[in-house]
Length: 300
Image: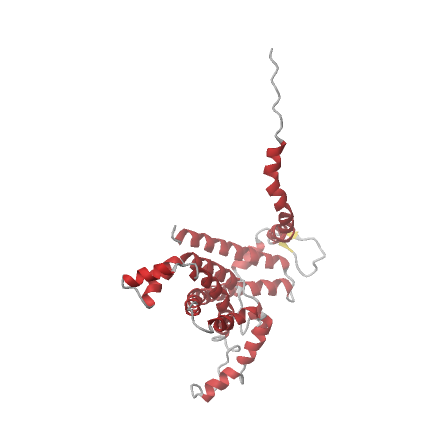
């Protein structure tokens, strides 16, 4: 009977395989405590009743919160407002910053001042920007005064106090705040395009604005997709503008899902479990939209 030789343990190979995970361990611990565990806790609370006295243990109620959500007219209104926010803000934030990036990419004297001017709103705090725009939108604010003096209007527009204008007024602030940020992303992509491609396009008769349609847009497609995803996520999570300028009013006309979630969790009702249900519904909606985006996007 022959004895089988034991295979020696290759400690060097084990160390090489474990080293990357050891480097990832601190970040995984932080993410686990600040992201994964709260997400699982919120998922559990969405099936419970946990309100008013948060010192008491949650009470399991099953799908009652989801039934309430299905019948909640305010939730569906805020969902419609969020979708409208996306439908207006995202196309503007995808197209206009690209045009600005093309303009400031020109090699002209003093162009860096224009880049700084377009980027300045990005570094301004949203609290400061929201207060400033609220003053501009006031009934006797600068915007209405300019419209009256130019003769366009005889009376001021209720920008933030009318259900017809409130949401669009807030969207304008979001767009103004994000133009410079996405312009910089596009500018980095434009500066990576070789000048020889534009010269070859000019020889083929593609010059002026057409060269950007034939050369710039196809080569900038990855950046366009990146900006579309980032701006869509930002528009879905919009909160500060609404909180500072309209508080979701008037008559919930400017209230989005995130603000409604905040209102339920930290408002007068302190309905934590229902807020978690709204957050879970928002997560599922974003997940479905992300999957559709990946499926409908070109493979290249």
